[in-house]
Image (cartoon, rainbow, N blue to C red; front, side, top):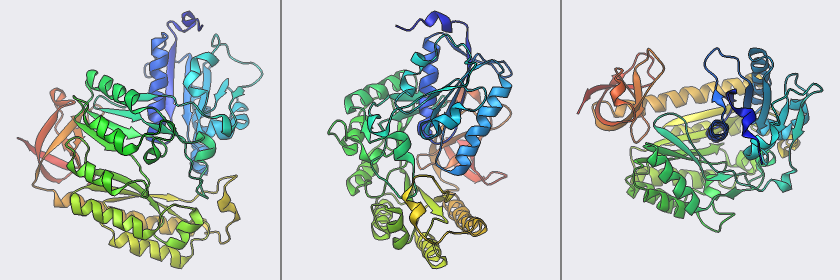
Length: 440
């Protein structure tokens, strides 16, 4: 039994690095602490407790995690510091040795964070790490949390059974596991009861949903589609081999699932995909894109690409560039390959120099800008429903169309969390959004 009296009148700050799933889990940790009596610290206020949820997808991410820990320790002297997330699971001793860190929690422990806080007394002899071996990471910690007033993030799955040669996520998150459809539908209903209009379906490998319960992602989508009150669902990143034609057709026919896809390609060269141990080829990826465009010509399609992986010769990169140039996608999320300890990619010959990685990344980013701008420009003059949300003070309000076009309008607090029909005008000053010219 946890004595929550020790948490009364305590304050906490939260810092998250990495993916939407991490942000969802941090929000759930925050809810847990608030229920125990912990208040979120105000801006400029020294906190009693610091929660840092880390990422380890690249070497740069590791560095950012260390920097964030040092910064928060300095900003909140005397605070009890807890570090969790992927970097904490992969490098627990390294994190525990950082001055000021008290507790390090792995993937299996983060959902039981309250059990590791003790009386919030600082450890004088360094931090203590609590992690589980990879084979013992089995629990699924549910999370349906509010990222802002309009958008909830529903975690439906965790872990990954895909051991891609460049990736440490299976080592950080464990095996694929999930909640039941029944429990996830109940969480969606609760989000609707709290005023949520939009839910983003998140996980590590969401298309692999069902390993724990014998269900399927397709069945989950059908069940969520029937929840009254939720107006929009967005499917976060889903593997091309798991984004079946049935799922694509379902999204095309659904009124609640938005025409918005995020599909990791990683390379447009079959030889590199083989080296990466991906489970598809460019032909299957091209088929998925063609099927989406056939059924939803105006769908937003974001694509992940990694440049500079081991084995990516000049010719292999040119194949990737030409493949993406012809694909009718909307935006490229470009990442430079980062060496990760313990991965099979380290056995591959041909290392790409950093400067060449940068040059390749810049070429793809320019291609991405061209595609995104053309996609936005096609919609100028159309009238579309936009779910509006607050921005930071002094900035216009913004929101997104069903197909994820960002739209800005003059600030009007009464329109927060409202779906408004807007005529889409020209680009804003920095060309990151279209202007909502008039309300319909």
